[in-house]
Image (cartoon, rainbow, N blue to C red; front, side, top):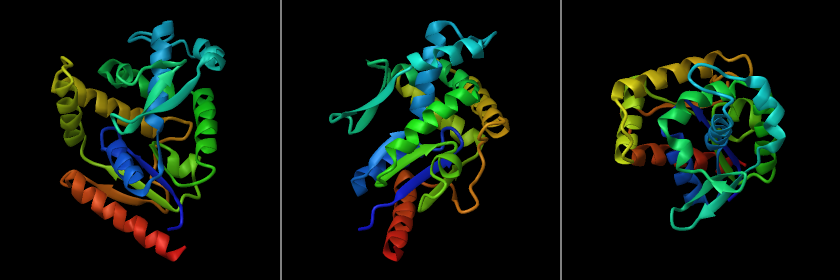
Length: 230
């Protein structure tokens, strides 16, 4: 079967990573969670004191970008690659609601985006990759053979995220999660550099009422249709 590039974009908490992992595992492709990369940079900014609920020293973060080293390491027990920040596994730390509250602001910084997009393009130069994020089909891989844009209502996405955090033992309220989702939506779609938009040739999927299995089956059918024509 011809190897292709699969770009999955969409709003936060639409299950992009879940779908991307399913596809990568089934197809034997490399999976890259670009959201984890931006989350890791946000965590770095938090650790350095560059960002807080009341301030954001963008220039300090920009100056420190050369000292941010990111890489993924595959965890056979989990079945996917985990995020490492400066050789430290931060997979758990980057999934907190606190990091979520800062990640879109950090992702607005053009210098941060330039650094990560460069790395992402390099990762996908040999195709056979599934990458999810906010600008994969529009900026990172504008020539991807398959582009998916995932969406769902803010309330549905907040409930999913709330359930996920509760299962991890995080003490959060649904109202706070919903507010975070709505704030991230606004920032992601209104930033000057690579705002979240639907690529002209992307296929939009509203998964508000789709199960993971139904969604996976639908997208896998798209993959098979495309590879047959190449």
